[in-house]
Length: 470
Image 1 (cartoon, rainbow, N blue to C red):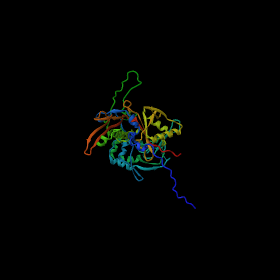
Image 2: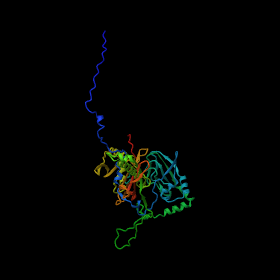
Image 3: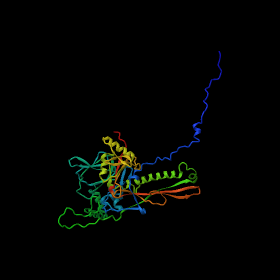
Image 4: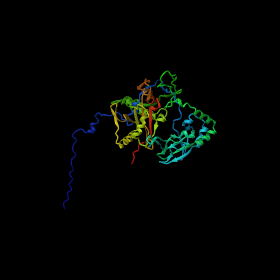
């Protein structure tokens, strides 16, 4: 037997006949993009707000005198399964507005009885005697009454912090003119007329306060609570005309400019040597300003002092009728004010609006804003704003506003002409070079927002944005 022990024939590798691309790249110029930033959004709020020059750093909103009768939300504290109203929060009730005796308020709070209700439970029945006030700690409640044609109509949807039956504490003949039904399970606290009377009988300070409350000049207010301007119309002959004057608030609200700042640091070696094809300091500054503008919009939405969500009038906050943002909810939001300029909603909320419209066979129209087509409802654009928070329960808010000083709307406040101004209302100030050869720049922007009259801004709260599994 013959064995072939000759080596196997191996294919020869092809000889390189030109310069490789890897080597060529060492001599080539690379085309580069400018530094990109995912945080940048459309910032529609900053673009749509009319910005008003605020010299002196303060803007005062002068209004007609209004009689404030307690229209805020009531806060509670929770200890396990027990809920208690914060005594000072009882001052949000109309009849306790301005009453500051903490001991008496605590005594009233101690008389409040907790009631946990289930979904579908009838809490009060139309036509029955009203003998207590109900404070809603948690949950959603609808009020229904008899309509003009005998059918049941929803007159209000209440949620956390709301109350109903306040007139029952002083009116022994009060009756419920609606039926209150729980939409979700929740908790409320009730205070009976008898318990309130028992506290009042032992507290002379409360008796005096209630007497003063009962003598308020209710007939001298318009439906907005403003001091009445006496007028005469439709008369003939020569009757004596009423005299009048327009009264103003004695302590108008003032908005001071807030600030967003940071210190940008750049090493001198970077600034000196690495500026081709893009200037390093300019690119650092550009991205810093983008982040600063994003923070500015966040503050305009969420700041407790001047942010839109926290400063919306409580009478301009409404609840959705069923949870998701339906066309009916958007219509109710619009009907509470004239000349609405825009909606603001989180992108996920806008998607929920689209689902509700599609489920009804409706499709939003579109309007042109600066050459960009955006969805609209009733001609009012619906603009995205990811600064509006989403809660753990997948709920969010929808903001609608009228804008401009001439329209008594919402305005942005800033001041231009700052030292070393880089953009209107934004300055970049050189702070020097330290012993480590690092250049520092102070980047500052000053801003705020003002709501000129309460109905300029409305909020649809607790909007359910999670997708339904039905």
